[in-house]
Length: 427
Ligand code: IMP
Image (tube, rainbow, N blue to C red; front, side, top):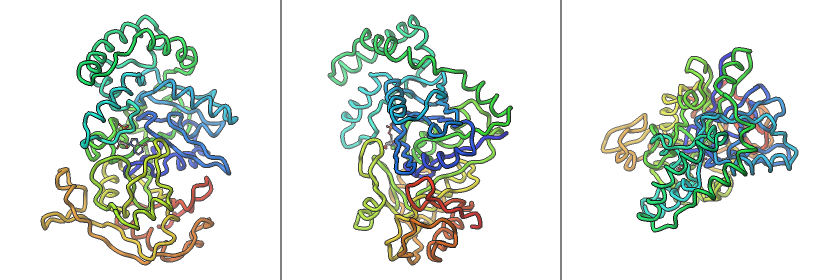
């Protein structure tokens, strides 16, 4: 049985949590493959709202095995807090499994994320300051501590002592901060977290392969998004992992031939938190209206998101980078009160036209979007349940996006609820 990937196609916050949750009813296993608690997946079930940072969204279904894959960086304190909060609300988390190869986010990662952002001043990246970048940097530098080290106190302590020596020198000598105490960190990780985390640890690669062999459905859930990818995003204003669909393989241990469906999730407009280029950004009343109607504040950090018109150039690039088979479009209803709607269909720079995102960042900073303009629908879409309920203008808007992107739009979100999706199979 092949696996399905859900991937964000813009700069994150497209509604992946909600889509994953929607698909979860057909799935047996849901896997997070990268990122950490920089993610904030918001899922609304009836009148209840859940925000998930590390635990895969499928946890809200009792039949699902939620897997935190090897590509994720895990802050055990956050994982346990999230599990406690879910349990307190009656959600069973006993099936959650964590890869022993996933790396740990350590206190010095968080401290370094904070001080380096401050040090960069006006050049700061606008990270979530959760220690994600420093944790991935240590993984690549081969000095990271892994989840499996929690079950071997001797190894844990040896590795911690080596790495902390260097981190403390950096914190004290470069950033003028107090050193961190190895005893305190080891005590917390080995005595407080390990007894609860170690029972969740499994050979997740084996689990996933056996699941597919047994004909079970596996969903790979990306965090962040295509243009925050460390290789393909707007570097350096990116996260430190690979949210693109290829990252689903390295971050889970499945091979490319085991994936046959890649669903790209896109908002009906574009948002971004943090710094970096944003060709269709709206620095005006329309941008403010999108923030207000779309409640565009970070799930995780509460930061106001930057907003702009839908950008088909980015989406075309996302189709290439992820082998997208289809699009799920979210938040179409946010557009309900707009008299006119614009779609960026190309960029122009120095007389040259770009149908795909230019590789050179300096060009991307200077491009001018080429827009196509359509009439708005000025109708409340939130109650729509079928294609027939959508006004012609809304259908035309979705049809234009599908044509410009080059893959079908299969689902359209018209509100935050689990059921507020319209199937758009015919576009
Ligand atoms: P980091 O992942 O905390 O290192 O932050 C790097 C960049 O990715 C910043 O611009 C963040 O705002 C952005 N980012 C990280 N996680 C998310 C997310 O879940 N949604 C949207 N942006 C994110």
